[in-house]
Structure formats: structure tokens, C-alpha cells
Image 1 (tube, helix red, strand yellow):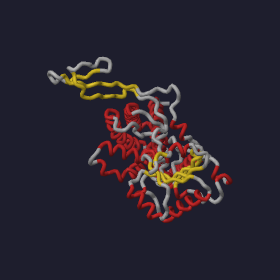
Image 2 (cartoon, rainbow, N blue to C red; image 1 turned 90 degrees about the vertical axis):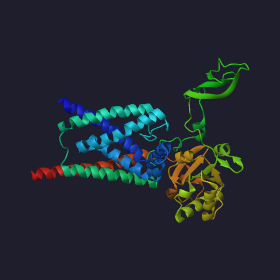
Image 3 (cartoon, one colour; image 1 turned 180 degrees about the vertical axis):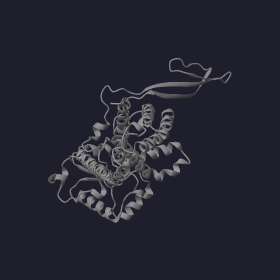
Image 4 (cartoon, rainbow, N blue to C red; image 1 turned 60 degrees about the vertical axis):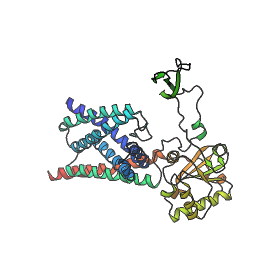
Length: 417
């Protein structure tokens, strides 16, 4: 086999695999990608913050394009066009990730969603390597033949893009197909908050700043050699973390009521607890139907003596408006906004806890119509997510039409010739 074809196949698989994986983990969690884009815009400041409302649309289009390009490269279709799009994306992302690595405005670039978190410098060098591989594909593209005819290949590209949009729509309406976050079903929150014995701690360097009383000269000293006489006046101190220690997967979970912190009380309860997570009540999907569904869930919890809380990071005015519209005085609890976005993507979503363990999670429209006590029904058992099955279904729903398109297109070409 021609060495150029071998190199091209290898580079196509590498670039296509990275793009496909990156696009897939983003498209199944479109809100997670949107939150990361909002973090970027906030770090950039004005006027970029004016585009915050477009973050979700951008996240879906970006992920769908990335997945389409990746699968196109893996299949070897529309090699010229897919390579151009991949090159344009890398020309944008590589300088951006260099800025992120230098300035560190966010700790995680989000290029692989929550599935694979890598540091900012690794992300930058990964993009540099991808740039070289994309250039290689461009230079060798003519040594690869067509998989199907022009119309067939464009049809595959279009179908892949809109299929990705459909997946994003499903995950927007429900929850991500795969949950890589520390609050996934089966996770124990207390264990996630604990620090193992012997885990490394932060390594810091403290600098003390003093001013000489005679000539007003300002100097910096370490903790070992700072002056201890009246000639020097203390001004300030700086502490820099040179190496971060162990950070538990869950480090910011807290539940605050008007009467105080109830976090330990809830996590130590051996019974069931319903947590309605709505990070922003003003922007929550609370149609009349969802209001009724929430009210029914609250009444069910009261009848069976289950804990029930609405967790939010909303301001008092929005909380008052929510209670007034609902006509129910729900027990409201304040929590961190980022934490609530991490716990569940849908706003609002419902989490079922028992013994500090996540037993189940639903978007509000998907909450079951509870009738029997949880102790006597299957809803009281820990859910067994069929995430792998869902992913396989999505894969074959994409693959079968693609193979049909390519097969039919080839037969039409042979019949025409």
C-alpha cells in the first residue's frame, strides 16, 4: 500500500476520533457546554458578556459541527470540506487555548465536557498536535478515493449534522445520555465530599511585604527571613498556591435555610429526600403542567413523610414570585448556583436521595406519577441507568441510515455508468 495512504488513514482516524469524541460528549450534554461558553464570556468581560444568551445555541451548533466533521473524517467522506472546517476550528481554538493556558481564566477548557478533564497547557499542546495532523490530511487528501458519490456524501453529512441536533434536543428535554458528574446515580455525596487520609494538601509560598521607616523602601521577605525590629513596618502579605492538593469531587455542596445549615441533617437521614433543583427560578421551565406536577410531588412527599426541598440560587424576589405563582409554600433552600447546575442539567430537575446516595434523577417533565410509598414500589429502588444502551441505540440509528445512503448511492452510480 502507498505510504501516503497509510499516513492519511492514520491521521484521519486520530483527528476524526478526537473530533467525534469531543463532539459527542458535548452534544449529549448541551447545557454543560453552554455553561462553559458562558464562563469564557464572563472571563473576557465586556462586550463579550452581551452574547451570554446565545451560549446554548452556540454549544449545540459547535458540538454538532465537531461531531459531523469527526465522523466524516472517520468515514473518509467530503475530505476536502471536512478538513477545511477542522482547520478553521483549530485556527480559532488553538490561540484561545493558549490564552487560557497563559491567563488561566477557567480551570478546565471543557473540550471534552465532563468526560475527560485535562489541564489548560495539555489542552493547548493537544491542539498544536491536531493542527499538524489536520495539515497532514490536507496535503495528502488527494491520495484517497471517494466513498460514495457527491450527492450521497453530502446527504450523509447533512443527516449526521441534524441527527446530532436531534440528540441535543432529546438531552435538553430529558437529561444527558451519560452522566460524568460527581452527582450521578449511585454516587454518595458524603463520600464525594471526604478527603482520603494522607491526601496531598496545597503547597503555598507566603511573601511578607515591609516598608523601611527611614527611606520608605518596600521589600519582600519570606517567612524565614522577615525583619523583626522597629525599623521595618509591616505592609501586606501574599500567599501563592504553587501546587494544588487533593480536591474532593464534591466540595461545595451545602443547603442553607433561614434557620441555618441543614446539609448534615439531610445527608445523614436514612429515609428518602426529594430535592427539586432549580438554580434560577426566573428562568425555570415552570409551565402550568410542570407546576401541577411539582405540586403533586410535594403532596405525595408530605403524605409519606419524606423530606422535600426546593434548592435554588435565586434572589428573594424571584423566590417570592415562584411561591406566589405556585400557590404552595414550598420549603425553600439556598445553595450555590454552580453546584446546582452540576447536580442536574434540567431547570428544574428532581433528585431522589437516601442515605446521602443519589437514587434517581429526572427532569421535571419526566418525574413519575408516584402513587405507592417508595418502600413498596420500584421507584424506591436505586435506578439502573441504561446509558450504554441509549448510546448504542443512538449509534445504530445513525449508522444504519448512513450505510443505506452510501449503499443506494453506489448502486445508482454503477447503474448510471
